[in-house]
Length: 154
Image (cartoon, rainbow, N blue to C red; front, side, top):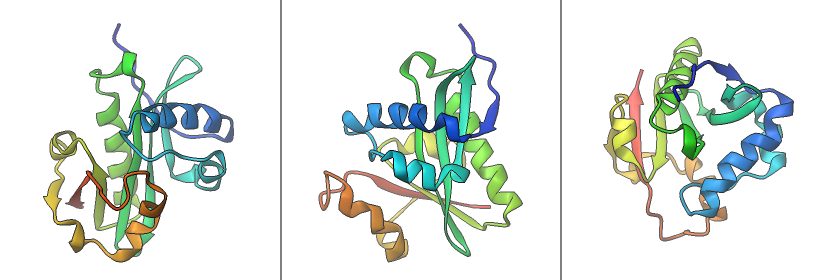
């Protein structure tokens, strides 16, 4: 069943559903888990896709510095994958980055091919400023990171 994809800014009431979706994939080792407090504190970063009243996809665009932002917590419900939802969420982040005049977007992922389809390219992690690694200390895979870094210049 094809879903009508409409990306919205997340609302406070979406936080528990966002956490549930992200942490489902985090429990499988595919992304970092997110605490409710972290999502509430950064709710303005998040975009969601709903199917009726259920959150089926989410991501966040988090500003790190004057010239750098990160796309993170990109998750799509397994039953809703391969329908363009992830791509729509990426486009929402890129559009907001343009509105903010943010010149560079990066992501850390285990699925680089998906981001490469959207104009991102691989970079050595050491090219990113140290500030972006603050979350790494809470990762269960630290210091043996298996994610790759990708960037896109707007």
